Image (cartoon, rainbow, N blue to C red; front, side, top):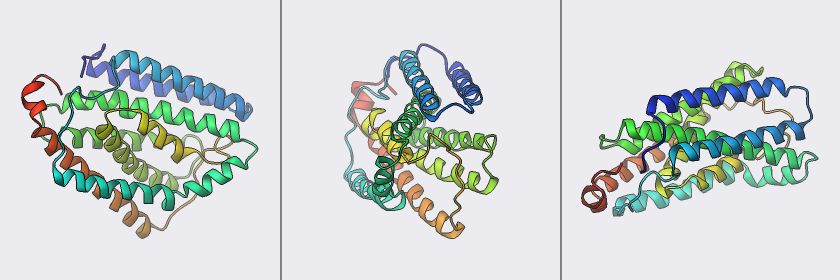
Length: 262
């Protein structure tokens, strides 16, 4: 990984500043039409993505291939199947897409979902992921710890919805599943060594009819079912990351060819 243009501490400062600017923009855009709000949010998301790309110099987290162990490949296959189940069944992606294409706010909803994909992924799986990875670079579980740390920030980030009028219980559930989803996206980021797939998955997850009009989450899932479902995905996500870390640690490229790389 190439050295970023700013220090780790400055990366956290920049993250805070970018989020603060987003909140100010949201306050300023209250009352405007959905298309204008979505356009501004998307433009800001793209500017943020460009700025972070400039700061990091590269969107890759390593410059060497990982030789995956057999166990990692098996867990990875199960993990892919689990992700498909998450998106197709629990997230109702097909039904959401049908609703989106039938909505009058199709264009603004699409731009709003894209803005979330670019802004949140480049912040959490880009800038923060880079900072945490450098912090844990000497740990045998560096990818797992980095994924959990950036996902924890991603979950806490959703507490800001309380400011926008969202009630406490839905927000708590949103924070929890955002943390788990953050681990999922971080595992995809780590395995593919790119931000393209996390941005796309985030976009699809958020692409819902009417989200440009209101993004307040009001639905509450029964806690037992909620914890079982998201606990399952968290366990599988962590299992994959731990196995990936073991493969990375045993990689001949990591230990000899690229001794100074993260």
